[in-house]
Length: 442
Image (cartoon, rainbow, N blue to C red; front, side):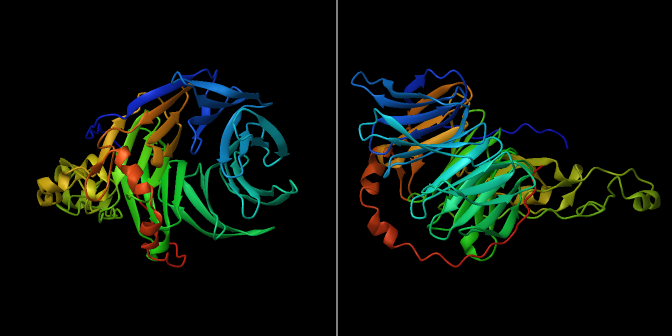
């Protein structure tokens, strides 16, 4: 497979409001505190810190707590003010934070894993703390008793997790590139299905329970939208990043997906349009355009006294073609290809100029991004990564848009202020039905 250099449309980057420096190692997670000018960070330097905005406009730590092992994952439940921190040694530590965010009390230790904790979620209704780890398992433990309720093992490191609190379904992404859907019970679980489509390890997941949509980002630089509730197994491929996709967030109100990659790229995808599914790649022993044999087709090569050609695939129609019949390159955003990809000559002629109009905007975060947290109501986004810096950003005009016009976050606040009426208009989610789709990337 020959390497190709892709270009993508550029846009202005978000406005940097402030940044926090002070950690001595990778910042594993940074979570905005709802209704507060503050953020909670967890780092590989074994510290948990709560940063509050002072009158000077700078963020200073109000809480500084040192752990026994590097912090690898974190979740925060604001209503109960409970923090769960996963560690490199496999333990999860629970803390309760005071109302003024100046004191944090240790509650309990959960021996959830035998290796690094990769993701955590907390369900208040069932009092479960659910986690995945590099010991290749998902575990769920009772926060009342601290006892282990169940475990399920995979063939690869479990890397990320999403959980549907209403139906108790868990989505687990792993290093083999597949996503496993499980139904968790009190002391057992059942595997519903596995989703396969990425060609690299799953690095991030986002579940939207209202529309029954699952989004997955991977080290193959791509994002896949899985229509879990659509009953048809529909999938959409999104390609626009140049590095592994480390964080994703779907904004249901505006039908937009925000994704961040390891190289600092931030993309905002318009999902409020009718997109096309990428076709499955067809298999053939000869070019499906000129019928010249591919290099493994010995019989046809001998019969025609010709040298075999290398096989390629058109990204628009999926046909197997030779290099001569696919010499053109084009973007095709309606199918998720924001940069130029290989297409056959006939498909190139069918693509109009308006078909190449970008359906995403791209911005530069100017640092490595491994984790992202967003607060739409306040117009804030916080990112962190291996450069030990936490950045507070306010997306610029054009960063997010609605179906009617481009909105600044100040306008979004007015829309968010009364979301109930809009949410009541949403259709009831259909029953669970999962299809498996294979999407190949070159």
